[in-house]
Image (tube, rainbow, N blue to C red; front, side, top):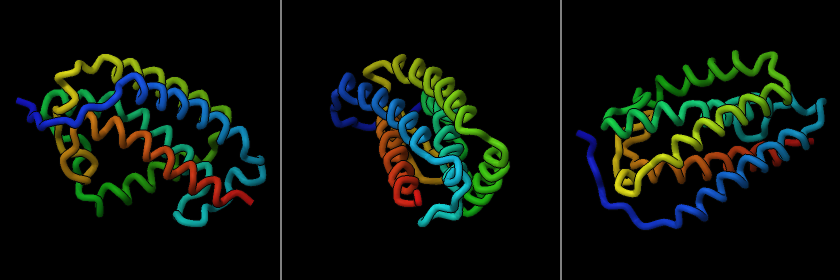
Length: 164
């Protein structure tokens, strides 16, 4: 049985609009990167700009499975960060090797549409359901939903600071 914890109320409509803004911002960000900078290393990570963009896509792609796990009260990809981090690093490096901006945008849009269909189906009494995610501890569905926005902002800022 999934565990429920009290959830601070939030404006679901406003937050959903922030997700739509994030989608537009991802497109703007990808389209603003000069071809010569696409494989440029970032200043604050061990990834290139293309790799961070691929990681941002992967995050959205995983959400429907993460939501499904939380709804069942099951942990999701809950390996220790010391194990999951290097696996993710290698996976993203491999995925981003030959990826193009157009392929990223296509994958992002497909993943975003699917993730939003699942998020939009969350019932009001489900936001407090939780499980352990990504080796980062216990998160409710609301935590996971809001983290998607802050995760995007973090990486978008890293990319902008790394552009020549």
